[in-house]
Image 1 (tube, rainbow, N blue to C red):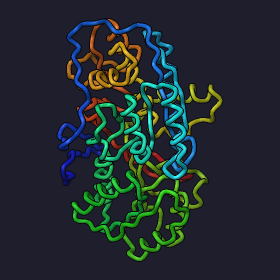
Image 2 (image 1 turned 60 degrees about the vertical axis):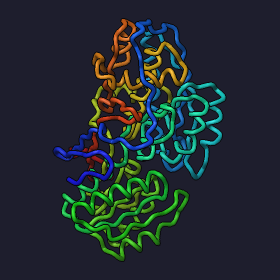
Image 3 (image 1 turned 180 degrees about the vertical axis):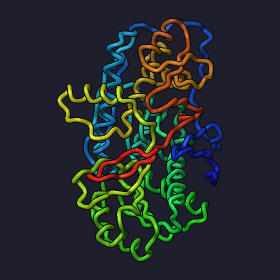
Length: 418
């Protein structure tokens, strides 16, 4: 496999990509504040953490809202139920997207609510628009789904973290999957934003590195509703495979491609559009494949998540994309706050690498209650979550990640293949 220039090297075992990000060091990267826990001070035992969430209730990523919101909600519920010295006061606001701009009002509401940390945004493009303001306000920001490589070197004063891996990894995995399936030519339709351009670049680099050729690479803007020109450009080149890097626009693009004579078993999709569509897409997607981050989730976690979410009067979550990453984001923030004995954003940030295992000398634990017991006993916790080991590096990126490969079966639902 060809390593991505200036980034991390991925290894694929039975279709699952495992990556170490320790080698990803870019000049000018911001650093997570270092931790000095030698003072032996006991963590505070009566903290109220004001936490905000900025996740998509509306807009082109609205289908990701329920899994992520449910992950946040379950984590908050379990932290508060543990009665371990910290209580979370959650304020949830709508992210929308870069087209609807709901985030402009929402972020001001969160800042005015004096939150110390924010889970979100879901879209890399939205995070880029709010991150500098959060840094200026001393607010820690942690995203469960930001994948743009740009965040690795963002000037964030150590206040930005993410539990999802960079697009450099997903693009590499997807490019190799397409090549391994025998495709020699590839057409790409991608949205012209931080998410789409990052994945397009990574996918192109990897696929062409295998000896393949990207014969068409066409973009559209997030607010567009017509994609005829893009489909015509792809059809004119008649590629062996077509990668669609989009959000909910896929529901319009897919029928156009099929009607143009490109069968769905040539489709390759990404985390932004990989979903159980059922009858929401007017064509069969059987045989299409796609990638998204995260290991296979344990049944107990998804059962707890559904129970918590539906108890609040919500319909069942259709799929669990980034639910684990959102859950882990909240747990890590709560543990860092407990370890710091503070609810100040900078103080929490200074402990994030430690509680994720980045210090290398913590005691492994897999739940908030278990980790909190270690911290309250004077020890150092190393949380391993449902999204993986996480383990933040000095840039706030997870050092390890898993990319799963999925395939559409009858009924337009996805099954994990490895």
